[in-house]
Length: 190
Image 1 (cartoon, rainbow, N blue to C red):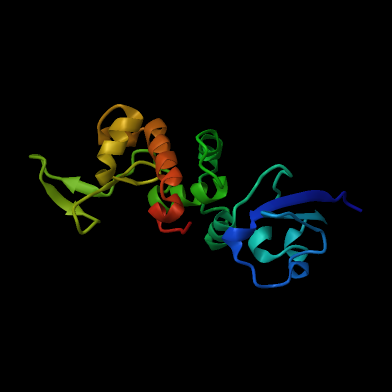
Image 2 (cartoon, rainbow, N blue to C red):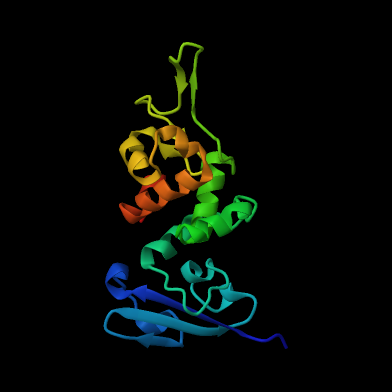
C-alpha cells in the first residue's frame, strides 16, 4: 500500500459564496469564521477523493493558502502539462506569481515560453506594419505585458517598455498587475 499524502487547502468563505452543504466538499473539513480548510488524506490519484476544482492543484503543501479565484483559474487551465513553461516556474514562484501553474500556462499560451516574444512588426523607418491588437498597442515578453503599461514599467523597472523583453522586468510588471487587478489582465479570471 502506498503512503497517503496530506492535502490542505484554505479557501476564503466570502469569496466562494458557497451554496452547497459543507459536507459535500469532503468529509475532513475544518470551518472557522472566515475560512474553510479542506484536509484530506489522499492517495496518488487525488481526483477520486476531492472535488475537481481542488484536485487540479495536484500536490499542494499544507501551508499553501489557495483563494477561491485561484482555484477557479486553475480549473480553467488545460491539464496537459505540455502546455506549460516548467523552466520558468521557479522564477514565477520567486516573483510571487502564484498559482505557479497558472502563470506557467499563461507563459506558454502568450509567448510559447519565449522571453523576447512580441506581437507587432515595424518597417525600417519605425512605422507599424502589423499589430495583433486593434488599438496598435503591443504585447512584450514571456507574459505578454501590453505597451500601455509604460508608466508602470518605468516605475517598477526604472526604464522604458523595451525592458519588458527581459525576464526580470516582465515578471516584476506581471506581479504589479497581479496585485492590482488579478488574473483578469491575462483573460483568465480573478
